[in-house]
Length: 143
Image (tube, rainbow, N blue to C red; front, side, top):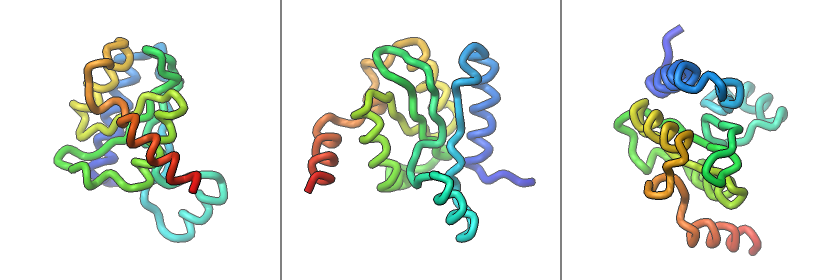
């Protein structure tokens, strides 16, 4: 089976993560919300799969965060490739104490993960959505 470019990045990331962090390998989980046909989407939705949830959830506390949510994009993707649902989930998770990030390619995914696992995240701009953005999104939901 031929994998799409983003799937190839995801597969390489998991292989790297399992070798780099074997003690945490069982705490990394992929969320199966990729593109699918209409019937499969309906079945997945009925099972609780939600659009926009980040590709990987790491259930490991670090640097004051409850876990890491990582959205993978192929190298060469742009910010506009991040969907509205993905941005909404990033905001929701950040408000719940999660570290959220979007990785554009395997190198950035490894850099983000190494920073998170090494508790070195305070100086990187792509780790937390802005507080104002998060508050604005939550205020809009209350209306």
